[in-house]
Image (cartoon, rainbow, N blue to C red; front, side, top):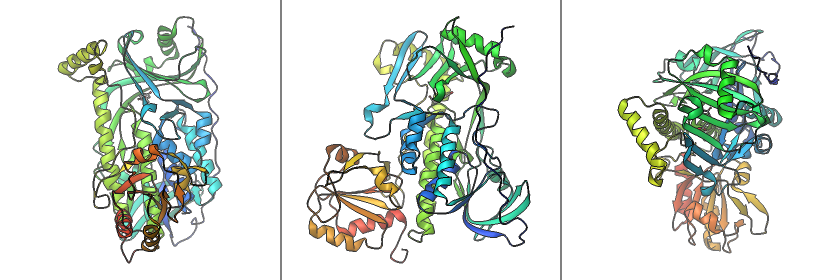
Length: 550
Ligand SMILES: O=C(O)CCc1cccc(O)c1
């Protein structure tokens, strides 16, 4: 039997266990914020809070990043996540290590039946996507958190019991040096899909499991292929089933093959069987080494509510979707960015507790939308009835000849920054604002993310206000977390140069119009003819603040 080469396993960092101060104490210590789970969403939240000067305790049962013995889970980081990483100070490392792409092609048999270019609608400094093994992202986040120095990161701390109190949450934690109890004003569950916290609190995740089966080969080979997302609905080299192809860092290709539903998972992941699949695809002479081979099936779940009293669920603990479109990991990172600034403002007494309710009001519908979109892709890839099979055959046949049918070919709709529906704090709903390059009146360059990284406040962009309006507005917003900037005009405010791209992207631009951008880069309000009072009201509404609070 032929032997196939395996690359040496990745050497991932290990951080030391330090006995926590609570060990041996009889009175549980109280912390304002405890996060459980140092995966992408928990780490993003801890980093976001630290960047805002907010302390948190982060507990993780392991002492490293990634999934031991397995390969990378998430591989595609979407623009909104990259913009968040830019604000958190790790984007440059991600861009230097990862693979930037924006173009996708979908094939049926030998024919290209659909393609997209995500750069077409972008005005951001960040690209539409970067592919990178998830453990690198986690690694960069841990190092940034350690650099910021405000997070009490406790490795080898496993939560064994959770109890909701009237004014907080009590946790029992097991460590190599013994067990201890701590209390939190607010607990964030970032423990992932199999959340033990969710189970302990008796919260139903409405889980369902697909019968569709896939097998990943992470592999290095020397064959120049474009750094694009390629998918096959029905690949001739995979017995007419689906295939995914992405390049990640270190020259590792993720090639993911759809398998028969009733396949023997041990058999399909044997190196000689996976090797035969690769040769079928890339030619009999292709030289390669495996990094990892792994069969998987996917499932989904969605909590009805992402807030239960003092406990908040983020990332996979709150929602799991099938992988098509990379909506899982990205939406966890965006959950964290949604919650971070809200926790910070509430902790600082600058916003009311209702702002924390808006986390659920915004991120639960976003997750629901992601679930709907990914479920449609999953059904296109694994039709469940004769009618669905017939429809798919018709779409693919038509797409080869007719442009109108191409958009119906569905191998995943890539992750987007979900808009938020109208709600009490967002009367018009909200949509994401990309990381636009900006120029200050004195010619210095900046970006929206750079401005947002400078503090936990909203940014008000006021197009050409008068001096008198500007002065009155500064009085009206004096106690509010708002950084007021003029766009063009001759007011006394710090001013950005007028720019058509900026105006078009914000959907404003007439003299006197005003756009309120939240700390998570969402447009929370658009006032066509702003007055100082209307601006102050818009900020108070968006932050659930009133005259007493702040
Ligand atoms: O390209 C995508 O849709 C996201 C990444 C992905 C999706 C499905 C399988 C897989 O291995 C990667």
